[in-house]
Image (cartoon, rainbow, N blue to C red; front, side, top):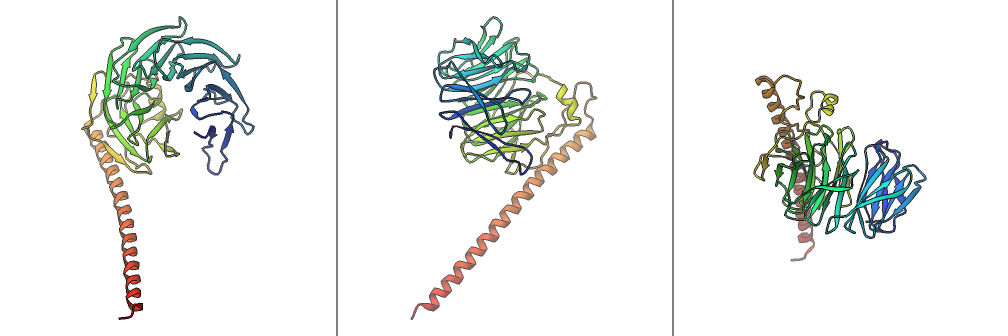
Length: 369
């Protein structure tokens, strides 16, 4: 909202860069695949491409006639796509620094637009309650998904490129197959609007951020809620996994950016990242599923089952038992932390009460009979 971008270094004691250039609130940011460029969109109707170094030089791209809500680089870094309140999706050339073409069938503000992993398709989400799938080459709308009951706030492609997930103001997250256009999964777990989502690079998990102030991690293979994360004081507005999936970051209306460690129970992380399986079909989840609540800092809980690649043997009983015990230990760890915090608060309360009694005694002694 302060019209600036901040580029943070993950190493401790490293200085952050603060980039000024936009004339109004910055609504979105995205690094190019190489990390050498940074794109931002703003309420000032422009997109800026920055070189993320100490100088912070930028180039402004102008073609939108209203707030730019979303910016996303293609996987080859040669082009990027933007979404705007002018009801259009626009594609731009990165290096030629020019506007290429518009996609304009939405009839209300467009909140989000993303390239598919192969760069052939574009998906967009709008306040007209639709998600639209576009062919980049023909520039035609391939399909419109109309199942959302409210504004659609965020959309992204699964790393396999075979499905999309969309979040909405109707508190839901929906996953569709882009080949058959079937609704695969439907989650209604948040108690307020879902503002953003991000797929884990393995494709097995989906992270969501909501106006109910929580983040949730969904296990797409099992079609269930894994974790609910409490940290933001107010709406959680954005989330993103790191390129490896080892970390994720969240931002909120509380002016906080939080970086979390994923801590997923994965046998061989490198192998899992290579397995891009689409989510299991037709799993419908509601708010009464079991979940693990983690306070901040995030607990060291682990997922209930190891993520297995298709080539591995089925899980035997002892492994399942071990995994369950690890999960229970994780939950006990969180309970221990909570009890410790409560004990500290109780000690503070006792100290305050003791001070009050001492003060009262002093006042009574000074007051003449």
